[in-house]
Length: 359
Ligand code: PLP
Ligand code: COI
Image 1 (cartoon, rainbow, N blue to C red):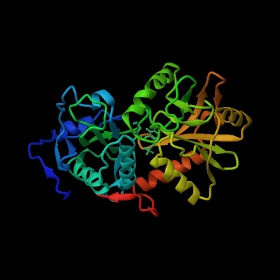
Image 2: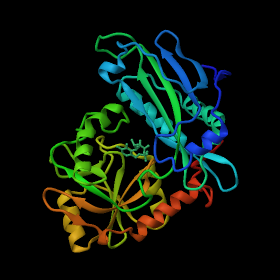
Image 3: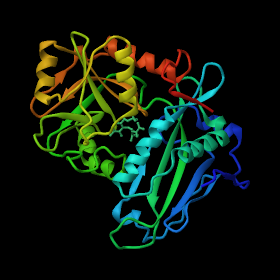
Image 4: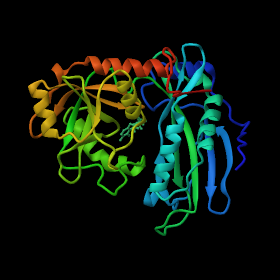
């Protein structure tokens, strides 16, 4: 498809005073911008009608197949204000590829990488004033769902791809602090052959009962174990995990198809190795985690993802025995990696891997 996004002139932005008000302490995912990007797909016409328009509620038929069979995928990435006054996306090509991988797994059409990136560029261009400065960023949420009006169980013949944007501050209330996680012994997130590696809404729907239990236990996030042995640590509800041993080695669960291949995870592996650290992608058992934390062999653990960036894990609550990690604070390697990543994302350090996509 030729890339020719049209801009809907009826999209009237909110007044700048209203915008400024909403951007004070926006938290995560509650403050939305003025516009949205849209591309339609049908088996008959392929990708068509790319445009940016006013953000508005959708009218969809109650028989739209997404409402029944959950054929839906999404992505999450950020646009940052750089120190030199410019703006940039962080590794949007990696999100574009993961969006294609998710689409393939959910039997959906694959959006070409250039259209994925252009849809985001056009939206950020229209909503540039919504990018917060300081610690904030513009969180971009591309997503696609089956819009065909049909109740048969089959891949839909029509889809709607959209991008919305949200001004965000810190993901966690109260800013960066060590979080407490709760180990889900009853529910798992994904099994081999399932959709664990895809970023589809259904994975999150299935995880919510465990996340709810974690909150009820006074914790911030749920830790999922593998579905077969109920032993291997996989990831949190919305973040990947790293473990730091006392010799400076980092361990992170391998990408065997049941966890999300995080772009933050991949970036941190690259940064840690460039910093001379050893990173091992290998299975790590919950009992090992507890024993290592108690013996002092494990000195730090942290979670990572686009929304929460790098977040230390201070305490683990588990039916088989609670434990604290490194005294429950923020470890040195966690802090160092967080700073290194943040400096590249905000343009205050060189970008040797060409991760920034300037807008
Ligand atoms: N794991 C899950 C389940 C997630 O939802 C996310 C967030 O996107 C991640 C890991 C981290 O992925 P990324 O670093 O690409 O944001
Ligand atoms: C992200 O980090 O982008 C996520 O998608 C995590 C969560 C908000 C689902």
